[in-house]
Length: 229
Image 1: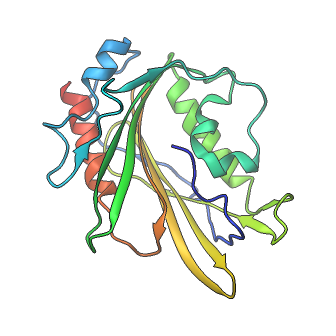
Image 2: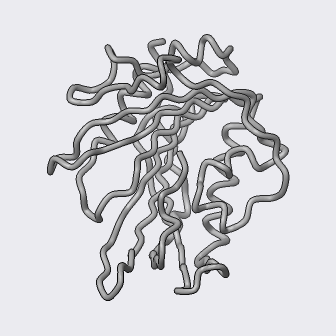
C-alpha cells in the first residue's frame, strides 16, 4: 500500500539486523505460480482471522496486476513506499502480484487497515528482492527529504520476522509526527515471508506508537492459507 507517512515533519530511529531469519520449515509451494494459483492462495472471508474481514474492492475481488518495470536503482527515498524496492532491481523483477485489503480493530478498539500481497518471481528473484531490501536499509541510516521545509528525516529498522516459510523479515518505521506545537509518534510495520519464489507481504496503515495490531495474526494466517491453497 502507499505509505501514509509523507506528512509535515517526521523523525524516526532505525537499526539493521545483521542476519535474516532462517526459518525452520516451508510448507508452501515453491513457485512461480500462475495468477489463478496466486489468487486461490490469498486470504478469503473464510480464512481471515476472527474479527477481521476481507474487503470487497468494488466487487472485483482480489486486485491482480503486472508490477511496473524497474526504471532506476532504488534510493533511500523509496523506503517511504517500501514495496517499490521489491520490483526495482532488474535482477529480481516479479512476474505478477495479487492483493487483497483487510480491515478490523486493534486491541484498543481503533480501526485497523492492512493488505496482503503475493509477489511471484522467477527462480531466485524473491530471495534477491529481500537481499535488496536489507542492503538498502543498511545503506540508509538516515534520509532527509529535501522538499520538506520542516526537515523530514526517515530511518527504518529490519528485525526478525515470524518463523514461517524459507525466510522472513519485518520492516519497521517509527516516526515522530509534528502537528503545530505538539507531536506524536506513529508506527508502521510490513512483514515479508518468502516461500520459494513467492513473497507474502502483509502491511498496515500507520497507527500511534505501541498500538497492538493484528498484523502478526494476519501474517500467520496468510502463510497458512498460501501453503494450503
